[in-house]
Every structure is written in structure tokens, then in C-alpha cells.
Image (cartoon, rainbow, N blue to C red):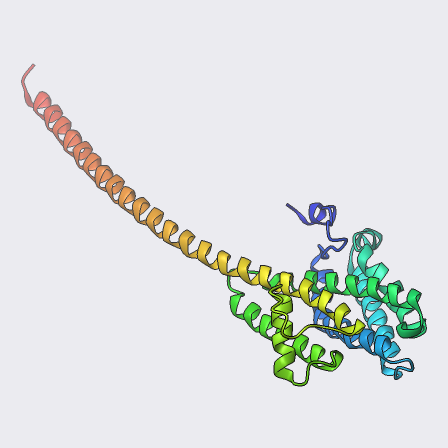
Length: 276
């Protein structure tokens, strides 16, 4: 598949990587800043939810994330040979720009159901964008990175529960609640009771399913790779044996051909020496 075919390929996520080398390089450069900007909107969402007069940092986080998404999308499209096609292939980023900007301008979520609903939708888009951005880690050699990512997500979710849930009195209890929530175990010893913690639990379940699925897929891919390598070694061994036998047969054929040629030459010489 050439680059033009890649650029015309469907984008089921509503997101598509740049096909050209220059645009893809710009996209990779924006990957880490974009991840950081989107991650900052998560605490901003809960600050807007639990505080009637949130600090300026909360709407500022939404505004910075909107600018980061717009800048990454715009610069990547500018380096692309078909900028309009690249923009049409990334509608989620366009929706994120509008939603994040609206999240920065709307009143706090605690006093406005409309603002809360919009920020919930933006949070779902942010989660989708984060999962899509980190898909490159789901490789046969990325198990260690995914395990570290899973531990980091578990720790951050535990800290989130410690911050949002009144019944959680320590970070350890928060991590335990995050684990039972992400694994959908639900022992019932610690449960989210506040509105913010319940909404947070929904995203923890989604993150848990996503992280557990990707880790499982990476481990399975590693096992598949081991089996493939074993099969490849066996196939190479058989091919090597067959090549050795073919070489031996070719050597025998060459020897027979030389012997036949020498015998024929001797017969010619004898026929020439015989008197007419």
C-alpha cells in the first residue's frame, strides 16, 4: 500500500495518521506535548465539578489543551500534500478543539448541568484520543512499557479516588478502590459515594478495561511471536537441509556430467586414431 492509498484509507476512530514523511514527523513531535495537555484536562474536569468557584488553572487547562490540539492538527495538515483531506480524516480532533474551548468558557459544572454534560462528552473524546495516541505501545516488544503504564494508571486513579472520595482516607485505600473498580471486582469494602467519585469510577472502569485489554493483547502477541520464531527456526532448518541435499545432488550431477564428457572425449580420440 503506497502513501496515497494510506491517506485515502478509512479512519474508523475518526482519527488518522499523516501519510507523508514530513507531516508524520511533525505529528510525532506533537505526540508528547499533546498527551500532557490532554491529561491536564482530567483534574480540571473534577475541579470544575467539586468547586463552585474553581481556580483559574481549571479553564486554563482546557484552553491550553484546545490550543495544543489545534496547533498539532494545523501544523500536521500544513506539512501534508493534501491538508484538507488530512483535516477531514481527523474529525475527532476538530470536535476536541471546539469542545475544549467551550469547556474553558462555560461556567463551573457544579452549577450547570449543561456545562457538566458538555465536559463529560469532552472527557470521553479525550479518553478516546489518549487511547488512540498510545496504540503504538501495543506491540510485541511493548509489554514492559504497557505494564509500567498500567501501574502508573492504577496509581493515578488511586490518587484520584483519594482526592475525590470522602470515605477514602489514604492513598493505599484509593489504589485498592481503583484496582477493584478497574478490574470490575467490586468487593464492596470501599465504594464511591460522592458524585465526582462516581463519575470518576466510570472512567476508571473504561481505563481499566482498555489497559487490561492492551496488556493482555501484548502478552498474547509475545507468545505468538515466540511460537512464530520457533516455527521460523524449524522452517529454516528444513530449508537448510533441503538446500544441502540439493547441493549434494547438483555436485553429483556435475561429477557425472564431467565423467560423461571425459568418456565421450576419449571415445572421439580413439575413433580419430583408428585407421580408415
